[in-house]
Image (tube, rainbow, N blue to C red; front, side, top):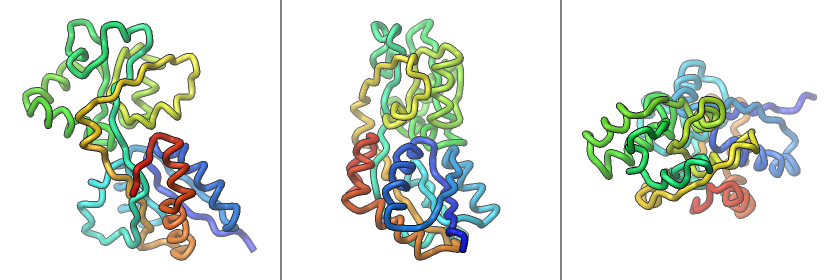
Length: 235
């Protein structure tokens, strides 16, 4: 008999942590996972349209606020996502804060707020500090808009972007070891950390297994894994 396969819609930033989580879960559960990764907004549109799959983990709880189709059944908070300033090491002498991004000649990117959670959170953060006019300044001066946290890393690697605002945990998934980064905390981002909430889906073909994985992610073992990937403090 074939093993059950769980389809997991997972925001880009959390994929490394979830891959480790899945390995630990499979030690006691005979199943396999198919991870569909991308920007949280894109994932939500996909699962809403096709109504197939078992689990959903977006980069922010805001993606649960509009749930007209009653897509989500069983949810647990398992971590937090925090924004940070990513700067190439060779540019760290002149870029160390959000204000520095607006200096003349700084080549920076931000996330697209219509596609992924990192862009949405960036917009919320900048608006909270500088207002709507401040947000427009960043939009006008950014040279690229990334779809998700992985795309922002790619822009730094391939397009010479000097700095970006990204999820802190994205540093764990840089595929290019030569991309030497400095990660600076953004004080205001700590108070605006986004809850990471994992949920089973209404149309899951394996609701028992999906619920068991949600509980595992919220367990002490799951919490240790989240902490290791910079996504801790889920309780």
